[in-house]
Image (cartoon, rainbow, N blue to C red; front, side, top):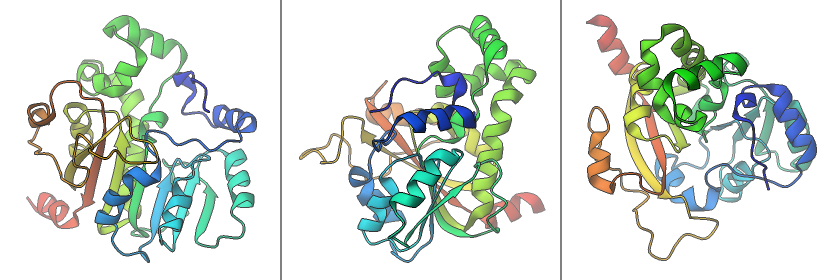
Length: 274
């Protein structure tokens, strides 16, 4: 079971190397594969489509995809310790490939290399700032650091360019790199606790995406509920600023948000030509 982490260390390789030296049991952030499988199958319908899982850690998520029939699942992580472990663990499963890589710099992959990218909150780990800068953020704007990561920085911190840049620059690099390695019409599936009123701005200010939003109960484990509160495969109504979501599911729902971002180069070309 994963222990509570000092969030200011999430962007550092040394932190994850130390953590995985001491944690041998698989751990999945947010959700395991089984509850999400219907949604993954919906947006990645062909089992021969090439899939990239970023920030994989020692999760069994990629294994679950291969067990479900996917034939080419590439997983990356910043920690060399966990990647070495996963390579050894799955040496007999050629469908699973593990590479040590920083999501902000995936130059080992060519443009348009993948049909889908699956991510459980990785860009918001690499966007964590540390030490005195973090202290200044909390002192100036109040709240907890988790609230800042949950999107507060994307709105309030805009009033402070230097702090906002420190947080958003690595996040934007990660999202831009994800966009680059995706094929046109490929899907970026992001599972996170961040509500759309915060996250949508990030997607709008990065690349050309067509974005859909789904939700899943946080309480789901390996076995889906007999009567889940939310229909996983049905997108929620999504207006420009995300305020329509609260009308649909209420304020502060106990859910994880799943953003399905479809790469749309035609929209980019239209914007460039305008």
